[in-house]
Every structure is written in structure tokens, then in C-alpha cells.
Image (cartoon, rainbow, N blue to C red; front, side, top):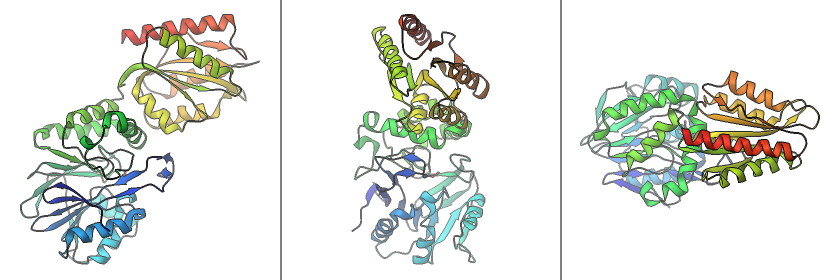
Length: 406
Ligand code: FEO
């Protein structure tokens, strides 16, 4: 049975929802699943915008055939070649040998590398930024979006009705489960965290490239009426709300003035220090305080939260005279994703040779960009005592002052 949604009067969502995959890209947990969005336009010519991961192939093919209702598929337009969207290209072409594939030079190169069977005289049309193409009533134009998220990525604007097929940009984790539009859900409450986790972990490294795409979009902002990404809800209202989030994330600017505490604790003593610090912060009037155990929180959530908050406290045990491995992994991931412009404080714990503090500060100062480390480091020897407890209170005061002065 088909499962499609109408986006406009002649454009259908024909994508699929994924609930059985535990890890997106085999690395990021997706407890709420993910959607692979594909769109089918019924103009004088029929046009399929991207395909889906092969996991959703059966439903997708049923959706496409239902909407086509016997018509040929004239064009398959590929904005992004990553297999979560491109894996079903071959199957579409087997079922529709009449289809001509429209994409750009780099995407066609990748199609060959992935072994897709797209050869054939007159079966491909290569387009470049600024080109236009008409399908009848609808005319589209192409905008390259390199590194958002792969080098071949482009977005396509239907200049007739203002639908922007935005590829990975403006996507989110989370299956749609019947909903389609962002205004059909409580996005801020139920989706924003997953949208941030998706963007920051998948494309966070490429902030300048997102900025470049936003710059191109701003030039035609008045023409964009609907944003149709390859994952998550479609936007037809409040576009500026989400564009503003993308602008902040890609400039590495925090959304919230607040404190994120990430702790590593083997026997509960560093955890106790983290909780005491969080209590001081809340008592001191901060209402944006979040606390995570690094050992039980996937790093993708920690990265997302670090993008969200202005201040971060790393509270860590010393382990083998080094940094506790999950904290080290978090630091390395921050570096890989180009995370920058945050204020950090460090709480270390060591029973005979506390080293974590020095090593974490060294990493923050030397490996990451534009990080500020507050000087008021707290050292705990095994467990909090009167002296380290007082230092913790002073650290809370320093954090509150720093948050409030930003
Ligand atoms: Fe959703 Fe870069 O693929």
C-alpha cells in the first residue's frame, strides 16, 4: 500500500521512514528513526527529486508507481549522491528505462564510482550552478552547495512555486510517521534537539560552506516559499526560524547562554562534584544548566549540546595518568567538527596524581579554535572536601559572572 503526502497541488512526498536502523551512518544513534525524503512532481513532464536508502526501497517504489499512475518517469533529478538518498537510483532506472537523469559533473562521477548503471546515449543531462530547466509549467534552477554535505551536493529551486529542494540542508533526524510539515509538529519542543544533533554531527565541520549556501539563499529569500529537505519535516511557514538556527550553528555561535556540565566518574565522586556544581549554578539563578555523564551519553548528543550552550564544564577523573577515554573521544570529536568559540572550565579528580586538568586544558587551548578556559580550575583529590567544595562554589560564581557578562 502506498504512503504518500501532497506537498503542493502537483508535488508529492514519496519518501520513506526508517525505524529499524540503530545507527545512522553506522555511528549516530537514531532512537526516533529517520526519514528519507523524495519528491515527485507531476508537470507536463514527471520529475523525481532524489531517491531513498535501499532499506526503504519497497515502500518508495510503491509510492512512486502510485503517484505516476501509469505515466512514464521522464526525469530523475539528483541533488545529493550519498547512498541514504541515492541507493535506489539503479532500481528506478531498471523499472523506468525511459528516465533521463539530471545532475552535476561530480555527482555523475560518484554515480560511476558507486557502480550505478547510468550509461546510455541521451540518458543524462549535466547541469551547473545557475542553469535553468523547464518541465512544463515549472522551471527550476540549480545552486551548488559543496560540502553540505558532500562535494557534489546541490540544491534546486523551483522558481515557479518557490519550492527549494534543499538536499541535506535543513534536515533532521527523526522519522516523520505520517506528519510532513514542520507546522504539523511542535518543532521547538519535539524536533529541535534532533535537528541540531543531525546538523552539528553530520555537517558541523563545514560551517563556512553552510554560510556560503545561506548567503546564496538570502539573495533569493523572497522567492523561497517551501523548503523540502531530504530528511525530516518540510517547511512552509516560519522559514526564518529554522534559517536563524542554521545561521547560528554554522557560525558556531551558541543558542543559549548557559552551562553544560559533562562529567566522567568511575565511582561517583566526580559525579558528586558535577551535581554540586550544577546545584550552585541553579541556586545562583542560572536556568540553563544541563548535566551529562560522558560514559552513558553518545558523543553525538554531547556535540549537539556543546553547540547549544555558551559555557561547558568538563569534570573528569584522571585515567592511566591521562584523560578519561570517553572525554578524550569527546575532545577529538569537537576538533573534527570544528567546534569553536566556547568558554570552558575544568574540574579534575585524581587520587594520587591528578593530570586530567592539565591535559584537557592543553587540548582546548592548542587543538581547538577560539576556546576560552576559565582560570578557576577545581582539583578534587578522591572526593570533595571542605577546600575543594569551596573552590567549586567559587567556580560556580565565576561561571555565573561569565555567562551574565556575555
Ligand atoms: Fe542524508 Fe549526506 O546524506
